[in-house]
Structure formats: C-alpha cells, structure tokens
Length: 169
Length: 291
Image (spheres, chains in turn orange, red):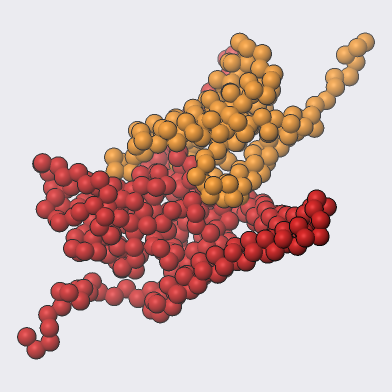
C-alpha cells in the first residue's frame, strides 16, 4: 500500500510540475522533482517497499518525460540503490543534504537517460552532448526545489507508520 | 535452494527491478512513442491537476491584480494615491488584454488568410521540455475537438510542431525543437530543399540534407515545403545561421533559429484539415502566358 501511495504522490507531483512550469518560464527552467521522491525512498524506505516504489516512480517518469519504456524505471531503481548506499555510509537528515542528494539524483537520471538513449538511438536522432549544460541546470534547480517536497513526503510516510505493540514491555 | 531464495529474496527483488526495466528499455528503444492504454489512462489522470493548477494561477493572478491589490492600496495610501493605483491597475489590465487581443487577432488573421485549412484554437496548459525526454506541450483540446495524431500545430509566427498524442480532452504536441522532429523545408529565397531537425534545445535546430552546392546564406528564411505530408507548404520554420560548408561530402551543415520560441507560446492553432496541393512553382519561376 505504501509504495502505491508514493507512486500516486509522484503522479501528483509530476502533474503539478508540468502545470507550474508552464507558468514559470514556459518550460525554459527544467526541474525533475520526482528525483527527490526516489531519493526519499532510498533514504527512508525499506528494501522491498522502497525499491518497488522507486520502480513505480520511474515508470511515472517514463510516462511524463516521454522516454522509451523502462529507461527511467531502471535509472530510478539505480538511484534508489545508490541513495541507500549513501544513507548506509552517511546520516542524511537535513534539508540541505536532501537537496544535494536530489540534485545529484536528477543529474544521474538525466545523464543516464542521455547516454543510454544515445547508445540505442540512430545517429541522427541521438541526443547531443550539448544537452549536458541543460541537465546541470536541471540538477541545480531540482536540488533547490527538493527540500520543499520533504514535509509532504514525511507526512505521507507518517500515514503508514505503525507503533510496534509491546515494545516497552 | 528454496532457503537460499528466501534468504536473498530482497536482493533478488532489487536485481529484478533493475534488470527487467533495462530489458524492456532495450526492447522498446526503437519505438519511444509506444504508449499502452494503461499508460494513456495514467497520463489522463494528470490532466485534471494541470487544468486546476492553471485555473488556480489564473484566478490568483486576477484576484491579486484586481481586488486584493486595490484593497491593499486603499489601506496604505490616501484617497488620491488610491485613485492613481486603481488607474494604474486598470491600465495594466488593459495592456495585458490588448496584448492578448493582438495575439488572438494575429492567430485569427493567420487562420483567415488560409481558407483552405480548418483550424482548432487551443491553449497551452502544460510543458515538458526536459532535456532527457520528448519536448512536449499539452493543449486543452483533444480528440473530442477533432484533433488527432500528426496534425500540424502553428501560430502566426510559424510552425510549433505536430500532434504527438491526442487524448479525449487534451493533446500532446511534439515541438519542432525535439530531437525526433524533422520537417521538410525550402529556403524561401532560392527554393533549395532541406530538413530542419531539432536538437533538444528550445532555441536551436539544425539543417539536414542541404546540398553543398545550394546557394544559402545566413539569415535565409526557411518555410515548410509540404513534401513531408504533415505540414502545409509555405509556413515559416526558422532562419539559417552559422553555415558550415564542408570541403568534402554532399551536404553543408547549418544551424537554424526556430521562428517560434516554444517557451513563450500561450495559444496555438491545430490545423485539422488542409488541401494537399501539388508542389507549385513560385510566381517568379512561372513562364509568362503566351511565350
């Protein structure tokens, strides 16, 4: 249930992002807020529900970005694994650290998508490396915007948090 | 074996979640536009949110520019200052309305100059111009309004793109700057043929298949040739810039500045029907009668 709720939340975030970007620069400012959702799964989700939610969010990313099926799903699970590795080594608690990780995740998702699409596409439609600066801008903006999502993600987690009975006995 | 599977089941699940999508990606890499009914249904769920957010922002801007701003001015200043503020606000609203009216008049004029075409007007309610994926604009009209796949989308300044997917009440437009967009064009001055292909940036495209021997200079206007069967002929696509004539090979390279900036589009026309006329010679090349 929890992964499903996170995927539904990701869908809502994606829709809000698409609509808001139309009013903020008409799309000239690229943002990938779903990267923050995947990072949150890596930091606070379990192995099973976190990875399933990350795959679901990746599927939503595939739909909204128009990438070939499976590309963003694969990259989102990869980001989940990396975020999990980071959280095992470092205690990520603050908003700034979350923003930093989200920016890194957005960069990884964008560059991963560029490279894999470049690898599989015909030469004339393959994305050029000239898109890398735009991916960097996207990472920076995602890093700046991601902390704003954190309270909503925590609230969503709290809905599924259950106290273990008899823990104090 | 079962015990081993049980022991490593979480690891195996994560590995499967990594490998299965990767396999699906390599299987679908050549058909990025494939969307199943489930994909369409899920995307359809996002359109009400896009509509509501658009409506909310428009309303909020309207309210702040009208009642709230006026009331704030009343609280802050005296009678005279309030009057000046109100007039200034009215002026701003009139300017905004005039600009919108000018845009719409331009669109209407464009539609009326081409009676052989039928158009559906639409507003842009969403943009997806991420560098990694497709570059799409979401329109507030869809299949129920007569819009279907591959229909040309234009504004008075020129070509915006073509309809990529039409849902019941909305439609996605693949803008001309997308990497997968290729438009057959002619140089307006010399009638030389070429293709304009997007490069994934909102402010640039490139010119493909322009013969090295063709006369082409920077600033040349490119218009649709109509030979791709998608766009009516004669619509502005962009201007040639940065020509690079290779010493060898068949073609010359050039960059194109699109006639339309996809980040600034608010209303568009979808060409729902147009007569596919033959490739007519321009007036300058038609031999005079009787000769």
